[in-house]
Image 1 (cartoon, rainbow, N blue to C red):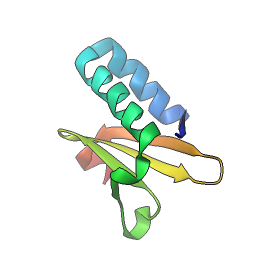
Image 2: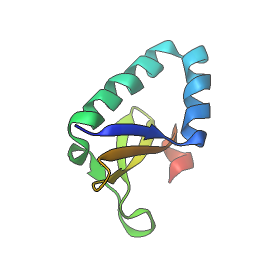
Image 3: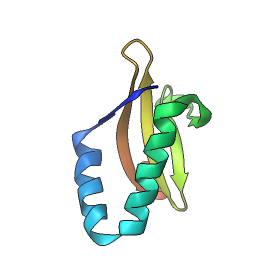
Length: 85
């Protein structure tokens, strides 16, 4: 099982989402539990975003990277699909 680290950028966004959209925030927490168990399940990105993976929430995307040596999944960003890509 992996540990979760959240970047400062993602942490600020999660704080805002927790206030505005509780349902989306709960979905993010549920997805993070899945990430702890099996982060390789999610889609790897290509080209300039190589070594980064994504998890979708409707029109929103959670991007993360896996550090296999430390056993850590680092959450990089969460935003609308159009803004991430």
